[in-house]
Length: 67
Image (cartoon, rainbow, N blue to C red; front, side, top):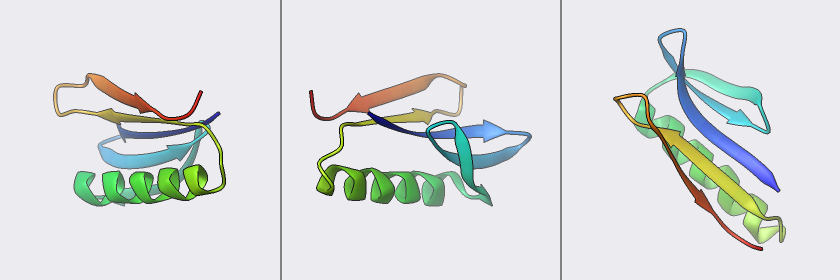
């Protein structure tokens, strides 16, 4: 399972892949688009994916694909 997350870290929206930051300092919408693109690529490679996105109140919402 590959996990992608978009969270607010140190005042900047950050994209994580399996707990490691891969992009930061971008808008929330760009961070979500990047995470969704990477999740799609992982799904195309037949990997199970979990995508977590933090909302403006701090709550994480998630989606999973695969088994």
